[in-house]
Structures are given as structure tokens and as C-alpha cells.
Amino acid sequence: MPGLVPPVADEREGLLAYLAQQRYLLRTSTYAISDEQARRTPCASSLSLGGLVKHCAHMERNWIDTVLQRRREHSGEDHAAQFRLGDDETLAGVIELYEQVALETEAAIGAIADLAQEVPVPKGVPWFPADLGAWSVRWVLLHLIEETARHAGHADIVREALDGATALPLMAAVEGWPATGRIRPWRVENE
Image 1: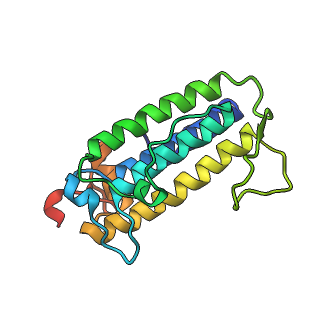
Image 2: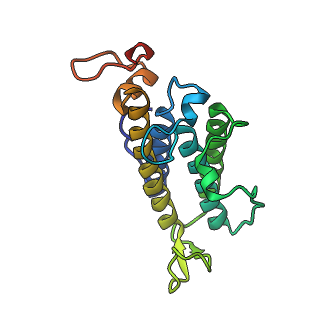
Image 3: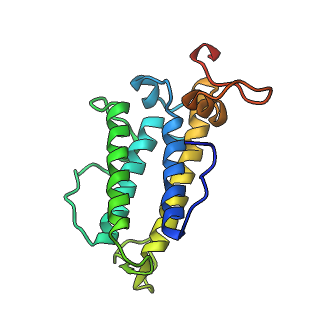
């Protein structure tokens, strides 16, 4: 995927393309790291790269479940555990989950005729507005972009604290960009 979203034909394509770009940037932050590194929390927070990918997969799936008014049995895992890559989990496994969730999102959104379709606001969630009956599918997509971008930014900080890698050199490495005076592809020997 290039560094920028390509031109889009319409709103739906644009929203899905920007969401895909933010997912890609989050996944890129995990380039060439081990499961052990994906569990590390090198900053003042308890955020890890594997945990951020895992959380974003669960968060996106929950929002699409909300759009589709689908109830899913939750694993019983507490919210904080969604931000940790467990000892029995692998980075490859949570990335695979995230890729599956992305396919589910694209299929679900592709099947909705009108992005203005109402999505009922779940009741009893303290951070959801009590005085609002519904969001639109469009709003949910914008929220997914915003939330994913926020966590991709967290991942940038965690990765830089972990081993000094930053977003553009990582992207250059993943995509095979040639070295320039400004950007050199990340290599493990940079550590």
C-alpha cells in the first residue's frame, strides 16, 4: 500500500480506504518484531504492539456488530486484557484476526445500501450519549478511522521506544522503497 490513500470514486470507497490505511499503518508498526517484543510495554503506559493490534481487531468487530445489530458471545476477557498479547497468543495470530475482521467489515459495509442508515446507540454505556437514539453507518466508519488512527499513533510511540524504529522507515522496509536522503528503510541492524 502506498504512503497515501489513492484517489477514490465515492464516499464509501473513501471511508473504507482510509480505514484500511490506518489498519495498515498499525500493522506496519509490528514489522520484524518477535512475539516477546510484541508483548513489551516500553513506555509509561501498559500499551504493547501486540495488544494494540488485538484491541483494534476486537474494537472494530464490536462496532460492526453494533451496526448489524448482531449479538456475539464475548470471551469473558476483561477490557484491559484486550490490550495485552497473552502468553498463549502470537503476534501472527492477532494480525490474522485483524485481517479477518477487516474482510468482515468490508463485506458488511458493502452490503449496506445507504451510509445514512441508522445504527441504534446502545443503552447503558456511560460514554455513549444518553440523549441520542442513533448514529449513522457513516458516523461509525468515521469513528473507526479515528479510533484506529489514534491507536496507530500509540503504536508509533511504543515501537520507537522499543527499538527506535519509526513509521516511515518501517513503511519503506515493508514496501521495499529505495533509500533516499530523507528516508532509509528500517533494518534490524539499525538497533
